[in-house]
Image (cartoon, rainbow, N blue to C red; front, side):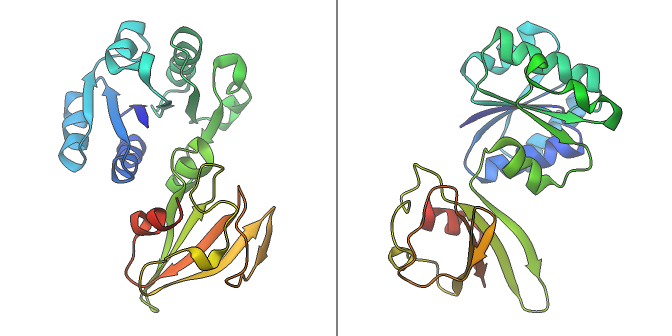
Length: 218
């Protein structure tokens, strides 16, 4: 997936790093070359210096061929303008925008080209998974005392395990499927449990990370 992240601040930087680690191609746009250099030092991103409120900057960033644009600047007006340009002028399929001031939240909808409005207080995981739908597998938390990770992966219609029994999944060593959440209801599955599109699978993993879990299910 090709992704443009506008804003190389803390949130934009974390978002870009998470997407790169998930195998996506990311371009980061910001007016501050220092911020962009800091992001590039931590993740393999393409950087564009400029004001993304200007159409030619978005075009330089690859808006005509991007699958997702995230407007994550600290200015709501800029995020709205960027979202509108991305959707209306460049036809970006999915636009997510950060809402800094809760009083402005009502503006962030399809009228401004925004598919998903994300509060500045929203955790990064929610921004990635629920906000953009850009990745199907995320690490939820680390249980330090037990020494294990809790990883969630969502079964999509295109996932290789859709409509197949859980017993056919080759999970990484030291990992177990703890639960499947279907339509908001959690169940403890057995090997015969058939996975369906939109199922949320919770995996407890000793050493495996989200990439290995993603490979097993997606």
